[in-house]
Picture 1 (cartoon, rainbow, N blue to C red):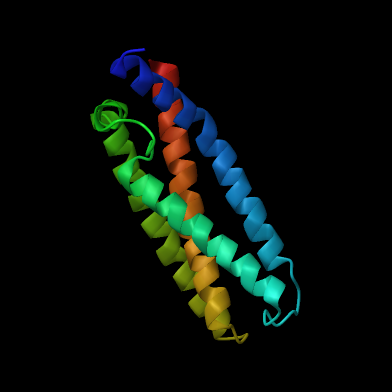
Picture 2 (cartoon, rainbow, N blue to C red; picture 1 turned 45 degrees about the vertical axis):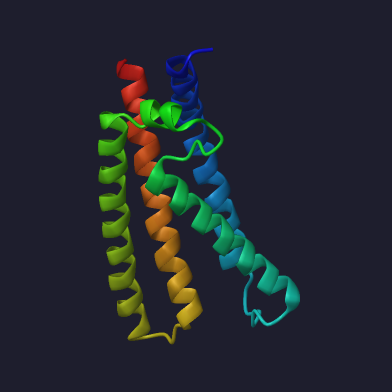
Length: 147
């Protein structure tokens, strides 16, 4: 298989996997936010938060450099063409705006209800990463449909 064919496969796989990754990320967040009044000091809570942090870092690194770590540099270069880089840039802008909107909402909420720092950070990161993933998935899917 040529590098161009591998790059095309990588791009198609990325287009299919982005919505799935977004759903997995959001479902993981739902379990965090549904934990109720637990203090988060149990070992299982630390493992859960560490898993969220690792997943968040992996997603951010993959979004930042295009992923495809197991492919050659040439395949990654072909898969991350100008349109994909533009989609990624647009997605990061949307994620940044979502993070700032989450900050505004959390600041407003904190005026009436005390809010823990960890919870606030978690919500801001979740909003930013989820919107970045969703917007990138939308743009890539639209581009793949348009040819």
